[in-house]
Image 1 (cartoon, rainbow, N blue to C red):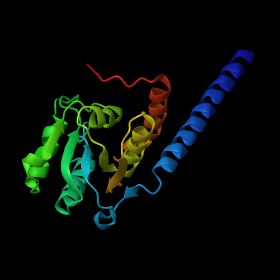
Image 2: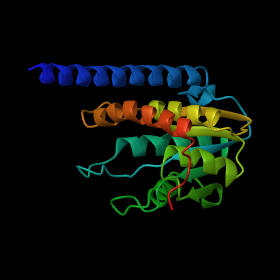
Image 3: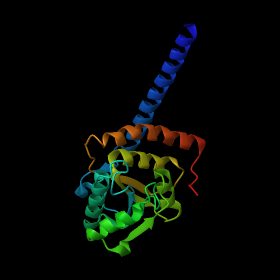
Image 4: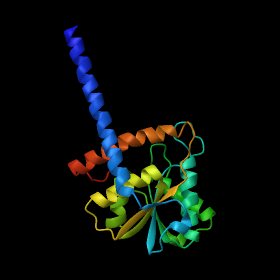
Length: 212
């Protein structure tokens, strides 16, 4: 009985510590992005920006339904482009995701269908994780002024990375694509809490190596 009580206390302590870590991580990420996230095209300040469109698949991986995250990011990016807020679009995602889908090509095709010329679209198929997308935008594509385009939770994390990876960006802001509110989408929001903790672990370990 005594051993059982000790195990329960240890588990409770671990769970409490993890919960506290999630809360602190979330607060830091949210605070860092304050004043640099936009949701209306007209409110985006003028500048020589490249749009960094963070990748996802057009269909959900589990149920194979339309991915509203994908559709809303495409819509947001096209709106920014046609309003003259971004001149080039760097699509950063996985060119060989788990289900065999090339995220960047799918996003490019969807942007072409919305009237964005191919000459203004750049594909980065090695943006396997958000940390890679941010680093590669700086090192491989020479971007210094970025508008990160994704849902709010994702933009907050990307902006934190841009500010804490030792990269000398001139300016990085985020444009929030509309966030889905379906029951299925809640899994993504729950996963984000863990992703933020993982991000801080990466930063602490300086574990920013790209996947081979």
